[in-house]
Image 1: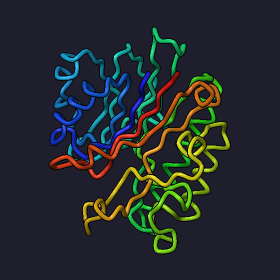
Image 2: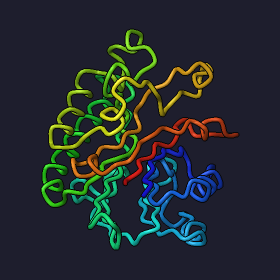
Image 3: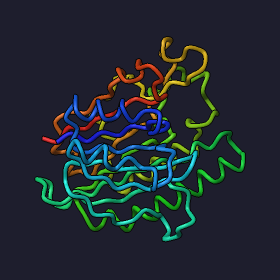
Image 4: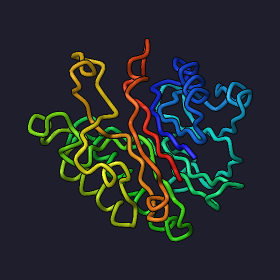
Length: 259
């Protein structure tokens, strides 16, 4: 089973890229972030025509998350707090009729935070606190849990192109990394880093300053799993090829293969 996370930075612009990637790579579950479209505009039919089910929650211009799956999906929640007014950044779904009984997948698009100390940064930290509280309850219910998406946090220095230059900047601050560690402390594993302790690969490169060509990147698109998931995974990899597309997303897919 192949499970992929990909911040597409507008599904409207990159729908054909996503459909091609699904078909070419035979992805079983694809979790998207930054779809940037309202629910009435979501291209459900396009995915159904190639054999996929969809659960999504979006808003115009900003945010938006979706889970595209060959398996049947059950929506558990699209909110961390139960409020319908939350920005569209979270989906908690369960897959049924699969080898991993009641596989629980949580798809997140964590706020960027803009600048340390700003209102947006405070919002990011508040959002992470809400996620932490949600996880404390949900992780007790299922041993087959995957938390994945665009975290907008580079967990360690190895996850940025220049740890000295980026010290004290957004996505690498002590507070953000401490909150990420609190999430891991609940019993989740950063599967890429646990599997590749010394490998430096990135999933996001700014559009500016030829960052992709210079490999000025960050690893911020992450797949975390419960111990049972980690023990039964076959591989995990970051695929930089879609970042070479015409009009690419600034992020590239990360894929977990379950044995």
